[in-house]
Image (cartoon, rainbow, N blue to C red; front, top):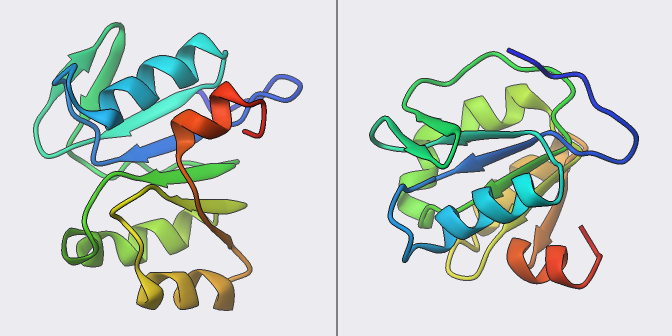
Length: 127
């Protein structure tokens, strides 16, 4: 799997990716790609978001800049170990995904937790 980064492009893992165009995770995958960021989309069922596959497995990755969450806190628990082993620079808790337990685990591992909206961050140049 390609994980090389060019310039300011940030390898991003979207957890809770959905092929439903009405879902914010769908928009996040689409807009991250439109901004040139490489995306790994992980969801509960295999699908496609444009040309980006949504996978169910937890692929081994390196050089992960960001994990952005689209899962409620209860659903996040099964991903704790995976998120921490990716050792991303930051972990974005999108609205509705805030989780103090995971926030503390991230801080202990030197991962910056951010409570923000990936879509807003992209549209305002803060990503």
